[in-house]
Length: 125
Image (cartoon, rainbow, N blue to C red):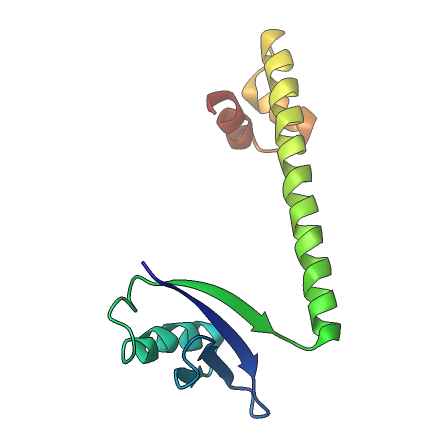
């Protein structure tokens, strides 16, 4: 299976331009990044037999100031994901302890500030 480097940049009209680095003549554009991704496979099929299954190593090029904001947002999303996992572990632990002391799912939910359905999910996971 082949692998190709594909870059995506926005032109002055706001269109996404996709280009295969290894095949300079292979390029296309789309109104959205998704559309450009789809169309670059179509364009690649004119040059490579395995275009439908080829791996793409993609680079999305945005202005530096926007890239800083994107990177910051990605870091924050990862931090949130980790915090959510820690929160779920803590909730499970509290649910197990409270349930072990005979508390009902509804009371546990009330005490933890979550629905009793969420408590049930935590018990059954």
